[in-house]
Image (cartoon, rainbow, N blue to C red; front, top):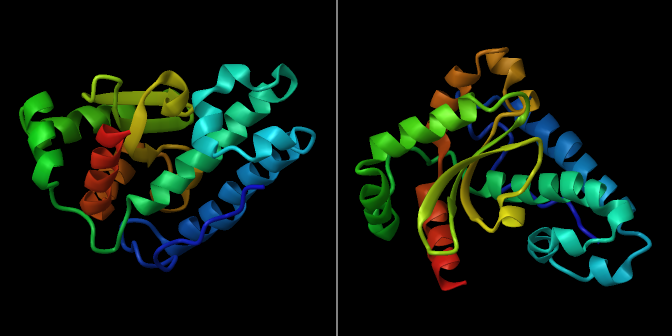
Length: 204
């Protein structure tokens, strides 16, 4: 059964960009709730319990229909947050380097263009959801926005960077000013981790 991963930093480590109380509630309450509901949905299906969350979400159409919506929502919430915590760091920010930087420059002409497009996709997501940088089946970078906790894995894309724009991710500090939160969030992006996820996606 799935369990809550530890954060790789303290709850207050991302200050002043993300406050400690938001991080604690987000991790221990919201992420944990997705895990609990996912495990409940899978209780009667031991074969599915043995699969990785990535395998489940990539084969969502094969999940038993009676639990498919619960798995889509809560499995997506589990996987999305697993990635989200790791692509942030108190030593984050700046710009990517290496092969990821080259790919960004090839696809978007410059990092500033990627930042602008991804910020717009995330800010423009109606209601709750996510903004993503992902790798498609042709190993090309794509910017996506998904509603609720939908996973890009279910759409055939491998996520390497995601910004959570559910209100619980930012409301205590930023209230309704989602664009301000997104602009601040870039200061905590862990580009080394994002590049490692990019290279992993190319090898998969």
